[in-house]
Length: 179
Image 1: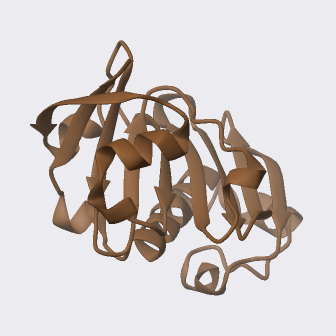
Image 2 (image 1 turned 180 degrees about the vertical axis):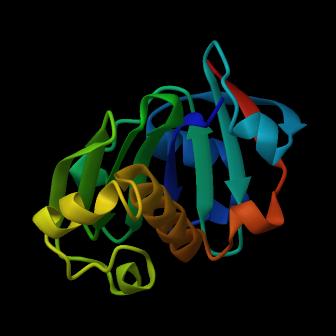
């Protein structure tokens, strides 16, 4: 069984204040306990959010997509993403200073959306970012699936935004109940 998670990475750590972050998201949270990276990326039922602060930013996991209002993204870099590996479905939207600059959607293993200019580090991923969607279509089945590509891309963007490779470090998250 694969990941089933949605999340947000923000290039601001809100002073590592969980209540300030919750207010920014437009919710009220009550911290309950610390959980492992594995628990944070596993299915949870109920109204929970798992939060990890770094010196550079914050990463949030939840089972339901967060809704980010474009006017709430000014002066920040924000990635909103969803990963449902079992259904080969991935999505992300990257905002910079109030504007959506990059988005992709893969549904049932097929590229459904690929908007915006390729990011500089996409050239380090396979397939190369200068390939058209048609080129990727031809290579995907024999070389790399869309789900591998977009999954790697999502985690690369998360790492860039929060300044840390969470798959390498496997940090502890703070679990909060959404009130």
